[in-house]
Amino acid sequence: MDIQLQKDYQKEIHAPFTDSLTGLYTHGFFQVSLDRELTRSRRYGLSFTIGLIDIDFFSAYNKRLGHLQGDRMLKELAGLILQKIRKADLAARYSGDVFTVIFINSNAPSVREAAERIRQSVEKAYGGATTVSVGLSSFPQDARNGESLIHRAQEALYQAKICGKNQVYFFKEEKMPMDGQKPRILAVDDDPGNLKLLAALLLPLNYEVIKASNGEDALSIVNKVDVDLILLDILMPNMDGYEICRRVKGNEATRLIPVVMITTLDDIESKIRGIEAGAEDFITKPPNKLELLARVKSLIKVKKLNSNLTSIENVLISMANAVESKDPYTKGHVLRVSKLAVALGKGKGLSMVDIEALRLGGILHDIGKIGIPQEILNKTLPLTPDEWEIMKGHADKGYMISLPLKKTLGSALDAIRYHHERLDGSGYPTGLKGDEISTVARIMAIVDFYDGVLTDRPYRKRMGNKEALAILRQEAGEGKLDKEIVEYLVEMVE
Image (tube, rainbow, N blue to C red):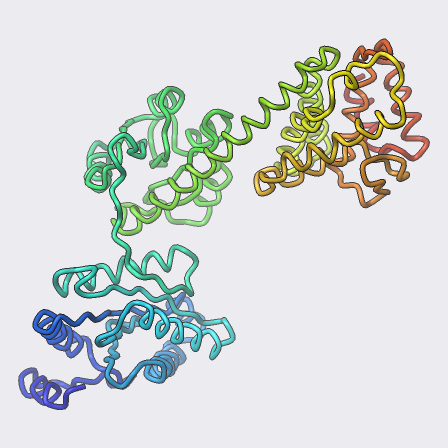
């Protein structure tokens, strides 16, 4: 740094230009240096970048170990920063636990590399127990003056924080959604002033904002309008935010809409109630603009992704229905299997994840039959060995058709592939035994078998319920089906 600039600063301000604790430059000297770099950049066409470096969870560290240890950490981190930047760059203490660096005449890749070196050195020095988040913005690419340059570095820093901390983020200007593609946000609050504030924050970014002042109106809107996000107040008369959230998440048509609760309540019990109701996130009133916009953007992306996956899921379900249309003897089979499997899963106390896997697995378990010739599906005589091998292939075919949705289907893939496996290894397609077969697949095998014997087939007439249950018990007694699940099914249907 220019010695003359230091002398001029000290003469003009009558104060030190370095921070007594960290040895870095002061906030005031940073501002003077920033003005100087802005002038140089405009005169010579040079670009530069500023970085804001914030210690993650520093306030908690201070509370736990005391301010003396906190000050020691600040001093150590200042030393690590100086080790990882060039002599030409300037490092300063921007505020309490936030540092800043002016990266002189640097391009984006080199700045990101330097910021990563700082982040990694801190992580390594403290074994991951202490980390930093870094926000970066460049002049003149991201801003036209110093104030907006700092503001955009703060936005990038906040983005790093909400994306998990221990991250390096460059400022990226938001692109406005094109007309006709506006994300639609429902704001629910009994205070008109709060609704007006939310609209003022969101409308400039081309979001469409729909307002509701009570729970009844909110639920009516989400049942009629395709909403991408709900911003929900908690404390409202008649129906509070928890109940609204529960109803939204309990409705199959609206459960994928992200819900952010905006509230003055900040105690743990209130947040737990919100999580139990199904809320994705919380923001304290009055909302911070950067926080609100970051959360809104992130959750709308999630909603769009889920909507795309749901569309693909619907295609698969349509294919499953097409399979049933090829075989009139199995009409309604997949829906009956799905409903009974879900009822069994709930009765056995399975997790919601497994119950959803049973729902989807029940619908999709026979989807592989779409690749089986109709003359084999509807044959009235016993299948030949070759035909039987083709028929058995439907489990693997269904698995391969559904595999692209692995992240969505999860253990439903077990139900699709292994619903003909048997505990003694006599099943197909892979001959799994005992504990190799998941609970989801065991339930699906039992329910599929049960509904199958209750249904007319080309080669035999359906059995009565009493006879069907007796055969289930026989199969369980022979070690083919899970005895405990079979007995629970018998108890449930009787």
